[in-house]
Image (cartoon, rainbow, N blue to C red; front, side):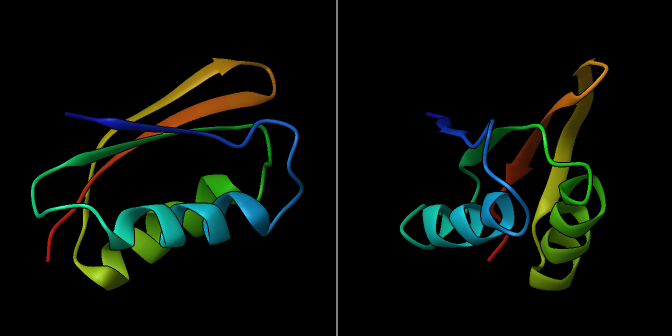
Length: 75
């Protein structure tokens, strides 16, 4: 079951900080859905996921200043 992390309205780096904390207690293969509106997170979240061995299964721009990234926990 996917876990949803709503960080819309948070300034960077908090969407990334919240994502790091949220994924710790998740099992391998579970998905974390991150909703955010911080432009810097469009780069920092995928970079972090790749570094940690997680997979980005979806990266969608919802509107002019809102995105959704789904991270599948790797290790």
